[in-house]
View 1 (spheres, rainbow, N blue to C red):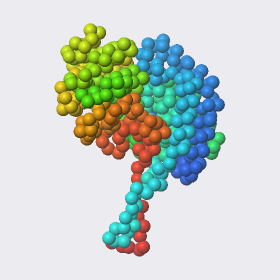
View 2 (cartoon, helix red, strand yellow):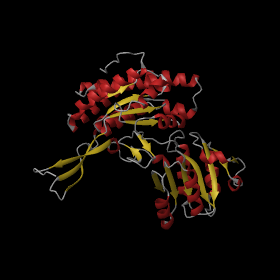
View 3 (cartoon, helix red, strand yellow):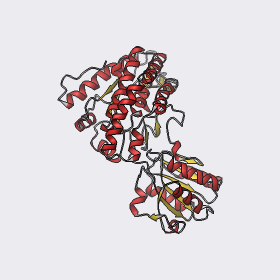
Length: 423
């Protein structure tokens, strides 16, 4: 089982001990075959199913505490597990096990003028710290992705899900060890002390990359304090633009799903833009209101339905994560693109249209990690993209962008083969 730190009261020592144990296990993992890693994950998935009763009982403790502490409905939805969700978590681990192993892939190769053979080969990043809130599924997803890509993981979950996370981690470690994978390759922070996060952020040389998954305050803190490379996004301010040439029924259905399927995920639509020449704007707005969505609109949107509230300047830059939506009417595609350029967080933006020219301009000109045509932004998910699971969605421009899965958890090294050359 996981190595215990020498000094439980010293947060820095705790983090260093866990990271060192993880790095040692990662070197052992690097010697294992792709099939061995896959077998370990399948065993971990089975352990999650075997421990379902325990995991769900621990999750109930977290949900009850969250209700007492006044967590929002969206936060409670992220937190709550049932048999179906737990089985989906186990299935996601199995899906990761079945994905092609990126480690060892040759990205490209060539021969230099000197005759040296040059290859770039994918390798694991090493020791990855994941700091997250509320979502117990991240414990399993992050662990599975790290193991499959040959990395070690140091997990620090939020206090809201502490019982669930510990139970999921314990089951996965048992499953991995049963299949011969070192359990220390997936470490879980045993304390909820906020100083542990600070110690992780400063553990340069022991932790190779930090991935934060949580609210704006958490991600901002990580990006401000980290002395370790960070892979993150701040907000999911996702837009859907209904173009004048959109199919009315399609537009109505996409808008409703993008907002209301699950309001608390980062791919949920937060702003709806409706072209002034779209003929069914009232139908789209009324349908959302009738399904329980609060709408805050500009003047032209408010004229469509008396239930629409007034949008303030702040609303266009707000990630509600709730059944609240900002809606604006725009004059044309150019106005929509301008609005998105000003207010999008670079996560996911969507156009609904039957016009090919408008489609192509939107795809080319919107500078977000994910740009969609005629689909709900709720598809912004690693599993839906065929990646098995995701460790997060990155909105930066370096290393990885969009859903980060196995390939995003690798780097590369140069392998150089000579025949006695000297310089």
